Length: 279
Image (cartoon, rainbow, N blue to C red; front, top):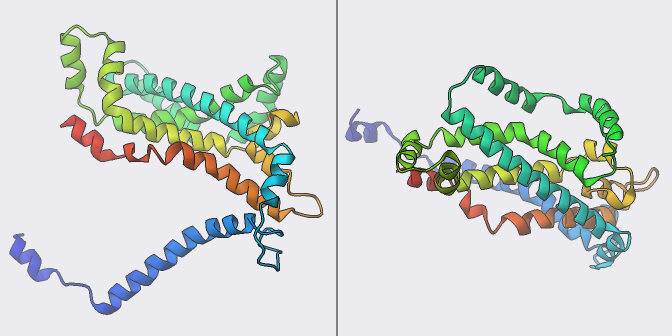
């Protein structure tokens, strides 16, 4: 169909359609942004916004959560999540490169097994893992949580990176190998620069999975000084009363490191950069 024929069939949306689209966009934006704004404002109110009847703004909620040791939870989460994300990303790069570049026996079965790990209900593994970790003295330890979160994020990271790597032509690898490069040099000097946006996107998602994980932390971390942010946030929910001011402030503090870490590098998460590199 020619361009002129297409233009004859295309009709500009009417005023009512544009108004409906604008209202839908405003409603969607409101639903997405309003909860975050409400939590932010509530964190500066004495009663946390839900129960507060006054418009007084105060930093008392933030002071109270840090006086209760919330800073220690931030450190624990950062240490565990950064280490687990780094280990998960490195392992996933190696696995994804093998799946995207080589043909070997049981390749399809192995890849299917990895995908199954993505949909597997991890909660059924808590009891056997707890017994294994208790035997290995990994309960209440950074190493135990790092191993758990690495295994928890590898399936999705491999799946995601394979999707990126298949868009990179094998001719780049072959050209480098003809010039005398080893496979490790190909990965480091050819694949890593080309795939940097994909690596950043994968690492970001893996970090967020670890950052918000609750069940494994609840099972494997019983010492207060080793607990992570989700457990620290839960302590403000009492059996009879909820400290909404502390909950709001802790929610803001929990979200803040994610913005500080990943907003400066979000520009690298762009499929266009991969396309440009391939061309």
